Image (cartoon, rainbow, N blue to C red; front, side, top):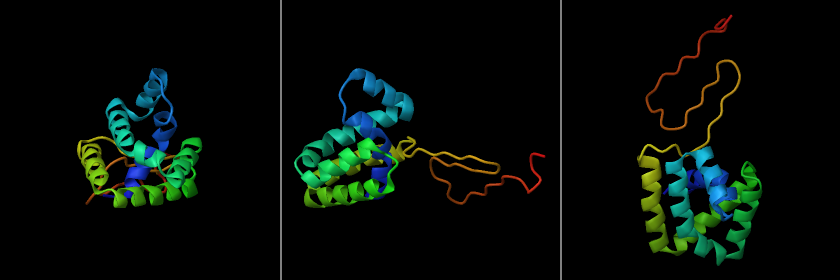
Length: 140
């Protein structure tokens, strides 16, 4: 399993996943899409007991939930998730199954932003693709 991609998928949703409440879930579903947030909830439900049981992992989740864009915090979370999954093959199998639903089911698993002239953002696969944004005079 690609733990880095899993971390990237969960990070922007962690502020919503760690808080309870229907309104919070509604906000997250608007942000990520209903299907993606549903998968994130199921992955988090599988991970949470192990995360809560390991201080370093719980701290990493709290840090990312506080600032989902902090790359250093995401790196620490990725390491902690990798350790948790390595320690528990059953958990790893359950999360892998859920992750396949997210990555194989057509769900966008990352937040993508492009800005500026000629910028391109791709939220899923772009294998063997040619992307043309125009020449230096495009848009003039």
